[in-house]
Length: 88
Image (cartoon, rainbow, N blue to C red; front, side):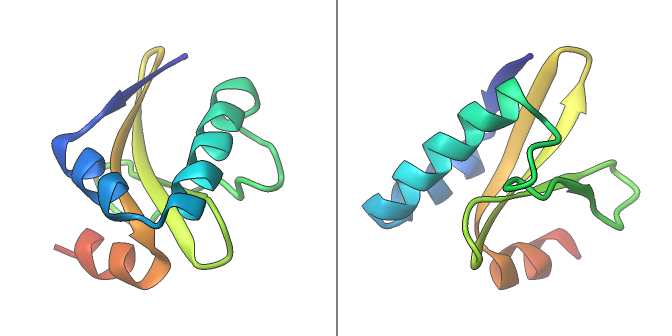
């Protein structure tokens, strides 16, 4: 699998505190090696666009879609922020 980043994901990532960026990097590597790793808590969101969610920390998440051999990273941020943006 490979990672691809939306422009919005890149903007979101750059705004994160350095400690969260470091945790995100670790979790994204983990996503590539073990989609089902317990610390990722990956789950499909209730969204008709087949959007998935993964955990970075207790309060931070990332969203993505799966295309063939690609994880397309959509957003990254606080859990509450992502819930409000994905309803649109």
